[in-house]
Amino acid sequence: MEDNRIIKVYLDQETRPFAEFSPPVKFVLDTTKIPDGKHSLRIVARSSNNVEGIKTIPFEVRNGPEIAVVGLKDNEVVDTQVPITINAYGSETNDSFVIRGSETPKAIPAWVWALLILFIGFALFYAIMYWNSELYTSFF
Image (cartoon, rainbow, N blue to C red; front, top):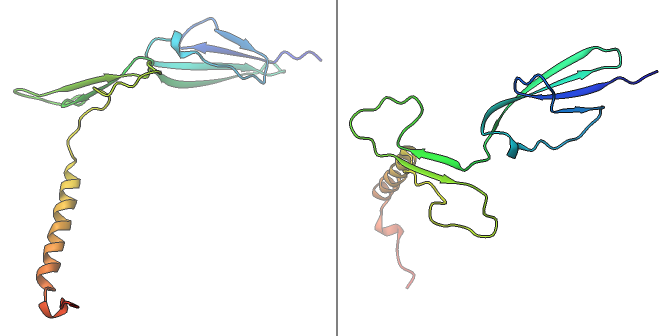
C-alpha cells in the first residue's frame, strides 16, 4: 500500500506552500525572513485515505526592537499637551550591555501608595492605642 500522507505548510494567504513534509516532522520556522506583524500559519495535512485536515495558527512576529510608550495608550482620548516617553530596546547585541535606555521609566502605581498609607496609618493607630510606658521598662 502506498503511503501518500503529506503535510503542507502555508504562510498567511499564500497559494503555494513554503514547505512539504511526510509526517511526522520537526522543522524550524525562521522568523527573521518574515516581516514584523501579525501572520498565520496554515497547515494542511492529507491522510492515507486522501482526506485533508486544516489547522490555522495565528502568531505575531517581532524581530525588531521592543518599543515602549509611556504617556499614551491605544485609542486614548487626549487634549492639551501630553508628555510621552518612548523607548526602544532589542537583543541584537550579545557581547555588551547598554545601561542607558535599558529600562522604561514608569510611575509607581496608585495601589502601592494606598497600601503604604494604610500600613503607616495602622502603625500610628497601633502606637497611639497601645502606648503605655509601664510596658516598656528598662532592664538596666
